[in-house]
Structures are given as C-alpha cells and as structure tokens.
Image (tube, rainbow, N blue to C red; front, side, top):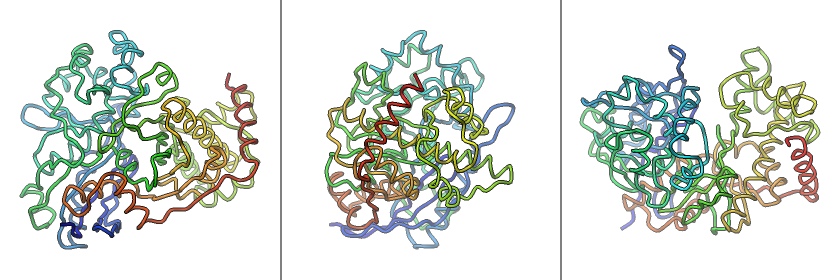
Length: 493
C-alpha cells in the first residue's frame, strides 16, 4: 500500500553538491534543500583532481542535516556527473583522488584506443559520441602507471560514494553506459572491447539497475550522521542526466529534452539505441536511462561558457552578476556574433571571453567587445546549437517532437528559454530546476512503495506538483533563425 516517505537525494554537480530532502506519496512530491557544499577541483603536480573526500564529507553533512530536518530518512540515492572514477587497491583503499575529466592527460588515450578499435567500430559497440574524456580514454591513458597497476576495483563517482556509505560494490548502469566500455546493445560490460584496449576485466564490478537496493548505511555512517537505522541506499539513475530525464514532466513521449547546466544534454528518449554511421557522424550518444530507456542525445558545452566568463570577469573585478549581465545582453542585437558551442577550445578552464573573441575573429566576425556582447554571443550560440540538436535527434531517431522540456539550472534563465523556443520553433516548458534531484527521489520512492507505475505515472506526479513556465516561439522568429543558421554555416565552413 502506498504511503508518504522521506528520502535524501544526493545530487552532485561539477561546481557544487547538495543534499535534498524529498517527501513523496501518491499525490505528494515536496523537495527542499537541506545542505549545499562547494565542489572545487584541485590541481596538484600539473594534474586536475576532484576533492572526493571533501565531497564525501559534504554528503555526510547533508545526511546529518536531513536527519535534523525530518527526523527519519526512508532512503538515500546518489547521482553525479559521468565518466570520472576512483580506483581501489586490494585492501579497498582509494588510490588517489579521481582525475577531473577536464584534465588534458585523458586525450593521450584517444589515439591508443583508436589504434586497436577504430571510431566507427567503437561506436557500433558503445554508441557514444566521441568525447576525449570518455572513461575508456581515461583508463587507457593511465596504462602503465603504478596506480592502475595496483588497482583491483573501478568505481564511478556515485558508486564510490555509495560504497563508502554501505560497503557494497557495484556499477549503476546509467552511469556505466557513459564509460565507453558498456555494450549499447546487450547493456553489459563489453568484455572483448575491454580485452582489446588492454584493461583487466576484473576491474569492473557487477552492474546494478535503478531501483536496486545497494545496501544500508553502515553503523559507522549512522553514528557519524546521527540517523536512526536502518536506512536503505537505493540505486537511482546515478548519471545526473538520467535522473533529470525522469524529472521531465512530459505528458506524451513526443518531446525533446534539454538538461541545461554546466553541460547541455539535448536529445530524446528511446527504447533502443541508434547506432548508424549517420548518428555517429552527427555526434549523438546512446546512454542508458531509467526503466530500460535510451537517452539519445548530443553533448553541448552548455552554460560552462557563461560560468567561466563570469569567473574570469569576477577575477578582473568586473560585474559578474548574472541578472545584470542578462539585462544588458537583451539590449544587444541578435546574432552579432556566434561561435560553435562544441568547439574543443572551450573545454578547459581559462579566460573564456578571450577564447570566444579569438573564435569570432578566426571566422571573420567582429569579436564581442563588451560583457553584454559576450553574453549575447553565448546565448545565441547555445540556442542555435539546441536548434540543430533537437532537429537532428528527431530526424536520426524517427521520434516525433512536439515540445521541448528544458530542465536544470538553465530553466531559470528566461532569456535562454525564450531564445530556445524561437530557435526550435516549438513550445519550451522550462522547469523543474531540480529535475535531477526529483528524478532521484522518485526512483527511490517507487522502490520503497511510496508511489507506483512507470515513467508516465512518475511524470504525471511531477506535472501535478511542480511549477513549469511555458515559452512560446514568437511570430516570425523561425525566419530569423533560418537566416542565422545559413549565415553561420557559411562562416564555419
């Protein structure tokens, strides 16, 4: 019988982590933040790392705060970004802090992998868009190091944190599907591929599906957090985008989604992967979702362009407040300059406005001169990338798209949401902002019996309980975007 329960949704992003408390029942879905903490990468000896122990400490602080806030927790679930991992030795000790996906070392693994498995064959196996930091390249780049030689267990970031909370070892499949070492068709570890790239199969733990019970908080964790036990830990869509897509309040399956944060993940939800050469050439990825779905999507650099620009301006003592920047950008004429949001020059941390100016100059455009012009360039460029990706996803997959759901932090950016509606020529439903935490909590709640049904029923509860803002395309907007698209195609060619 369904009942109201309280869950902690641990949601870790590239710049911050938070623990959200969710109260869930058949007609109830309430979410509030109980603890937020910074996620600050650290560079040591030339390598960029994640401070994984700092993150774990933040998780424990959040669970302690959730207990103070609500008394008892009925479950915990963890989602985070993809591809990065920790390695454990034979005693179960962590072999150093995980290396950040933006570290340049990973690119050295690309040629080594492609020397034994060409890009076309690799795509037919794993279905992933080529990104130089995919886990397969990270691990191959580390071959021959003392760390990898000593490793006996590979755990992705949310699996590592769950291991410390429970003692359990496993790999949740939505995040495992981003490694490049999972077979997109069988949905199991690609053993032959692992052999060919020179990695030991025994590194890779058993796979878990969203909704599987991983274990319970250990007595040590209960003592540390003050929580009364037992507290189960459940596998959710541990890739934050997998949880965010669960958190899309769509009424039908004829939708595209944009999970808009540091990265923008733009795609559609399918039942099976699309492994065609056309799909590979277009840069689309097939990652697994909750309930056996496929997240067919294109990875776009996203709000990282804006975030890094703000960081640069703040360091220079300039205005970096987003509302003020957006208000100024709204006064700049559209398409004054645009860049390719997928340009790899934008991947690493650094002076983003200077890089944007250089990209514009190289393509014969007048570089942005003011902060407002830089912001307008970024927003127009992102909306143009969303237009291409939504249309390509629909064409390559055969999925009809009648609306776009934009979820995540970008849903607060009303200017970007309106530009996206204009660019795509489709209604854009903006929100919920906390889609990943909501999707995380809903999978836990279903596993615990607080709600029931499939994704359609979970999304109906979202529509009933969460605020969403509608942006309609403005009359005549499509003609302007068509012209901009043609001009940009000529410039970039």
